Every structure is written in structure tokens, then in C-alpha cells.
Length: 206
Length: 206
Image (cartoon, chains in turn red, cyan):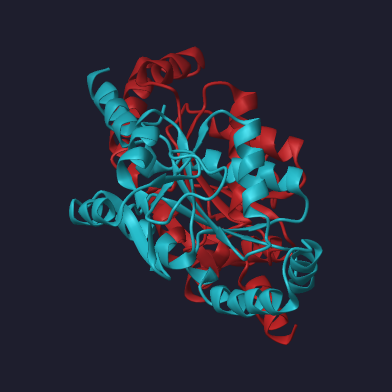
């Protein structure tokens, strides 16, 4: 009944399990598409252009900025990262619900431009569990882990700007919960304006 | 994780099947409570005080108005109808999701006082189906049916003020859809402020 797909912006603390969650969602349901970012950094080993990222030159990236071809962008260290608008919009027009994993500043910019986007903040059931997961990865030093926890304190200040929080306690039920959150958005009045116009006309002419 | 139940306001065209839908929801899940209106009209045969309505005198009703004990109220013909605040709030505090079936003017008043309430508009898949259902009841004259259809045209103007539309095509899937809509609200940031404060504190002290 509704006109196009939903844009779901997913943020959350490092270690909250966002990546695993989106992978599970994409594997289980075929109505999702993952937004692919553009970046000026070089591909790492195994990364494929158009899969992990669209790898572009700095000139091309700046051209995209000028042409308003990016929903949002940011600079980290010496590289640019941004969300190409065309890919997101074409997926949504095809009826796909688009998942966009992005940090908080970017998420707020997306919401400004697409008020119908829903912002979901993924978090562990408690802070201890977050620390446990970061340590459990076994890939980072305690310095890095502590830096991530301090970053989490900062990010936590922005949680109020989100629409939904999603507690990632157990991956399977959390995936279902995320799927429901997004599915329900298809019934929002603002996503059904054409249908509402149509039924109004029908009622007048009956 | 969240603090209290959700308030779900259900409106929709006469003949859209709101009553059947809420009955199905209450029978299938035990997390719901139906809001009971207060009225100054006399009980009809079979109606029980505190079940169909709280039957009160006009003096008592006006006292409730003055004491701000009603979320909203309206006068139809010679009688008052209103939603007692205490019952709704106490059910929500006990964790129940409260269903409030009410017409559009009342729904908008509820939203003003409780911005966290969700407004759901139930409708048939198309206008022809609405007419068919009204005729199918077999209990009303064509004059009454036509008056209801004209009323539907008026009500349709207000649909944009709702949060969600719910197409009642098939009762069982529609009940599930309504259940999901309400369940998802428990994850709204605004319904989890205490939890968010708590995790912020935990992160600072870890």
C-alpha cells in the first residue's frame, strides 16, 4: 500500500553489535538494502568498490559535495566519507528499506533532510556488557578499549535525538525487533499520502 | 526495560471493524487494557457499570470536568461522554498498553495532553469495501448507511493528523499488525528516559 521503502539510520556504541545485526537482517529478509558510503581513502585488502565503499578521488568527492549528491558527509583524519544520495533514493523507490550505518552527527543531518527517516540507536543491555564485549574481541589494547568507552560516554549524550533504542541482548530476537521497527514505519500516515488521497476521492464519488 | 505502558488511540470509519479488532487483540494478548468511558446517559439493557461505561450523574460528570479528571470529553445530543484519566494512567503505570477507541476530535485532544500517545486510524482497503460492510450488517437503512458514508468523507479529512493507518483487510493479520505497531512504541527513546539516564551513569563510572 505504501509508496516506497523506509530509510533506517542505525547508530550505536562501538561493540554494541551493529554490524552483526545488519548482516543478520540482510540475510533473513530480502526487503533490505545496505547504503554504501563513498570515501576518498584507499581500499584495504579484500575490499571491493561498490561493496564495502564507493572508492573515489578527492576531486570526485568534492564534485559530489558541490552537486548536492551526498546526503551527509564528514572528514576523518585526512579522508572524506559520505552517503551518496542517488543510491539510497533509487533503492527506496524500488521499495527497498535502506539501512544506513552512521555515527550520530551524520544521523542528525540525515534526519534534517529526510524527516521520515527513523533513527535507531543500538546498545548493549548495560555498560558492563559493553566493556565485556570490547574486551572479548581480543583484538584491541586496553588503551583502545578505554578510549572507546570514553567515546561511548560522549555518544550517550546524543541518544535522546534518536527515535528508537534497540537493546542488543541476543542477536536473533534483536534482529526480529529491528525488523518490526522498520516494518511498522510503512504504516505511518506520512508514508501513505497517495493512498489517503485516493480513498478520499473514492469516498466522495461512491 | 521501559517504564510504563503505551497509550494507543484507535479511530476509524464506522464499519472499518475497530470493535472486532480490539476484541481480538484483548483476547489474544494479556498486555492490553481497554479504556472505559464515563457517560451521563442511562445504561441500556445488558450494560454493566465499569464494563461498557462508568455511568455517572451529570453533576458528577461536571465535577470530573472541573477537577481535570477527564483526558477529553464531548457532548452528544443531551449526554456527556469522557475518558477518565485515573483509570488510563493507573493501567499504564501497571505496564498495560491502554486502548482508547474514540473519534477524531477526542483523539487530537488526547495527543495534545499525551504527546507520547500513538494515534491509529483503522480503515477498509477501499471505499467500496466500506460500503459493502455497512450494507452487509443488515441492521441499518440505506439512509443511515449513506449518512455514515458522508460522515466518513468528513472524517477522512482528519486522517493526516494520525500517526499510523491500519488497513483492516483480514482480521487476523490486522490484529497482528496493530499488536506490532503498539509493541514497537515501547522502544521509543521517549519511553525509555530512565533507562538511558541509568546507562549514562554506568558508562561514566565504569
